[in-house]
Length: 97
Image 1 (spheres, rainbow, N blue to C red):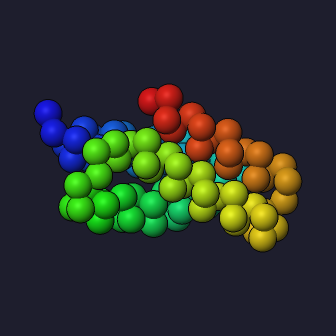
Image 2 (tube, one colour):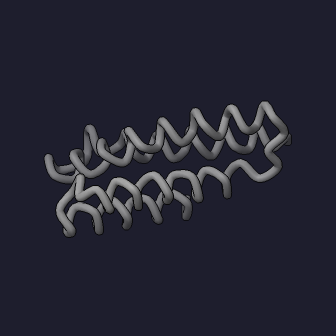
């Protein structure tokens, strides 16, 4: 299985997990998942471009890219401390799937 295929499968699994909050989550959980989902989509698009250029470890690159985006957003105080912690917890759980 190619790195591209592995990446797509993993990204799809992560996306499905984020989407599950639409049906199963509380309003606040949906807010947290939706916030992360926006950053996730941007990071996936950026990593897909890198795959085209020969990226060898796209899942790790996705994790680093998404973490950098989130830390920048948290540094800009886009969320309360509590919400940022919840987004970070959900972010970490995505890479355990």
